[in-house]
Image 1: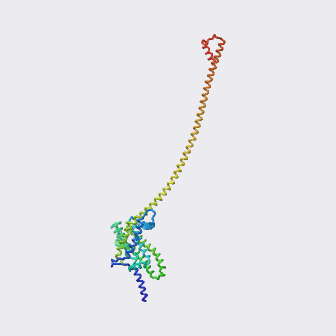
Image 2 (image 1 turned 60 degrees about the vertical axis):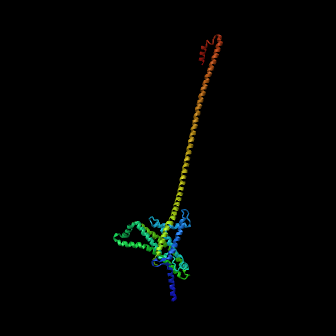
Image 3 (image 1 turned 90 degrees about the horizontal axis):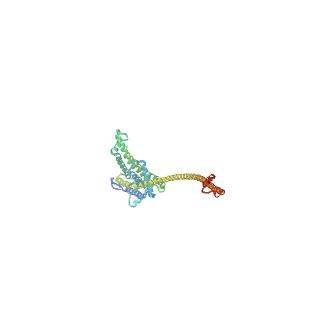
Length: 258
Length: 157
């Protein structure tokens, strides 16, 4: 009994250990160093790759790097053209950054769950949570930035009064003003929350399942983690794609003047 | 799991990434894409234009050939006509020349006949004169009877 309880506690401990970020500070001023570090490194990777392609960009025959970068650009640009009917210098680069960055965050999920924390512990780092998208701070940081952009463009395109009118008088006309306002506020606030929680939830759950698989005997693990990893390749791409497309859609809604 | 200052850090990183992408990554790559699209479109258009030009040139060449053939036929016809004319003209000339020659010959013959007549008349007059001389002897003075002699010789002519 005692050993069993201990084992259960060991498993729980293992899970908790894996899901605890490396942090410094107290209260609100806590910083998750692992999230900051990995997302910055991945952002740097993204920037480095695309800058390399951009520096050598030629309208002649493209190289391998440029080819891939152009593929991504065209892919993102097509998405933007499909749903966004205004002119904006920001939205293309924004969508590209979101897609690539989120994809790279999510990609960290495919590293074996123990390998980076093990390397970390060798270097004296006790806790290490390597997937930035399993940190609500990372997903919310992105979705709140998008939310600010939505507000900014709504006010810029429709004017403060136009935006206020849209909040008050739609969808049911001026006689139901409070109701309209409530509905619209919920709708607007739901955008960043759903964006952030969708990404977080998917990746957190995915990571948790990897951790649970890692708790099983080693000879069962491949049979489970291999299909799950393959399935996860789909999920991480899909989640990055969804985040990007919804951002474009929300921003195009902000640009639409009724 | 709590929201904390990491959020702010992440937002700053995100803003920097977006700014950098917007400034240094998107424009050159996007421009090169657009430029390549334009190049390809231009190339295709040029190829099409070239094809059209070839067709036009072929048509033009056919036209020129046809015109040349027509012209040569015309020239040959003209030349034949001209040749016929020349032949006709020379025939006419020859005919006229022949007639002229005949007329000249006739005139000459006439003249010669006259001369012969003149000669004969003279001879007959001489003969008559000598005969009369012989008949009359020296009685007849040539100078005296000149008038009579010429009268006689005129009657002979």
